[in-house]
Amino acid sequence: MEQSLRSARVANFVYFALCGSLIGTWVVHIPAVEEQVGISHATLGSLLVLLGLGAFTGMRVAGRLADRLGAHVVLPIGGVLSSTTVVLPGLFPSLWMLAGALLVFGFCNGCLDVSMNAHAVQVEKAYNRPIMSAFHAMFSVGGVIASLVGVGTASLGMSLTAGMATVGAAGIVIALVSARALLPSAPQPAVTDGRQARAGKRRKPPGRIWILATLAAMVMLAEGAANDWSALHLKDVLGAPASTAAFAYGTYAAAMTTGRLLADRVSGRFGPMAVLRYGAITAAAGITIVSVTPWIWAAFAGWALFGLGLSGCVPQLYSATWRVDPAAAGANISRAAGLGYLGMLSGPAVIGWLTHLVPLNHAFLLLTLLCAIAASAAGVLRTGSGRTRETVRSSQ
Image (tube, rainbow, N blue to C red):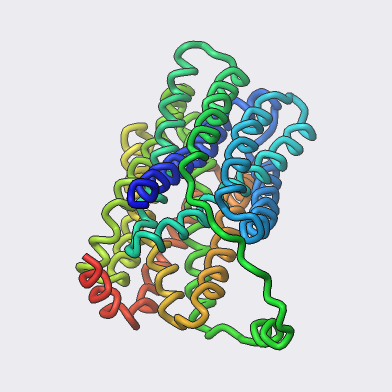
């Protein structure tokens, strides 16, 4: 059992990295797709809403299937579908066909995302200690891999479609091979007691939950904006070549990975409030540098600070929702995650729409404002921070 558990953990690491690399593949090819279709930043921002809507729908469908069939069944399917459809945005020169491609890819990637997190919870429970942050760090590793592959395919002169298809083909193989190591799980029965179901619907969450969820939405809006606009910023604002611009997202993702690997220890030593406050301040400083600098090297430094600062914020907010009411932990975390995901979906579109009014780099100042609000509101994590430090120490 111990060997199978370790294998399942490694397999889950692989799926998180796969998901990050597929999203990263789309991100680093955004400038080429935009040029191929001949659309503006603002139009691209509107199209990205379809990517988010597809992902949100896929998450809802995959979540229900995972409850009925088990995450170990849904996860490989999500991995194969997402790998297969990652090439679609690079295939079509038509605006409407691109819109459909983004909707389909978003749906499939949403299926992969929610099923890998469901399996991660299962593995974490089996280990009986926190390991979720490490899984999410692997998502960022996948983004770095995608950035490097994007640079490599661009340097080799590969076409847009060929570069994306190469990643997709590798992803299909990885998803199928890793499926053998997943932990089987018994499907959970649906609630049949009408009184229990009605009681669950009537229960209202504390107001503090909605504050935490709103902060999660702000932080994840900033994350979403960085995902889709970092490469375009270097290419269009600073005039960097495509092979160099692809490194912007890689720099951000690498810093995010480093922060996620360190965030649990920092939180255990100084408390979650410090992680949120000083992380948000660091992120605000980084994105401000990106907004005002005329130098490519300074922009890379700004994106790195932005990723490092944001990396530990959302995990602290999620943990705080659990501590508000342990009896309703699942419902409270889902509220914060749901609102946060909506923030991430809207981030790219909001920046795109702002480019109607101001240049792209000036639109990033909205992210500075959101990070400043998150830093000033970090006191919402004060309650229970001591308990968090004790919990971390006792688990080590």
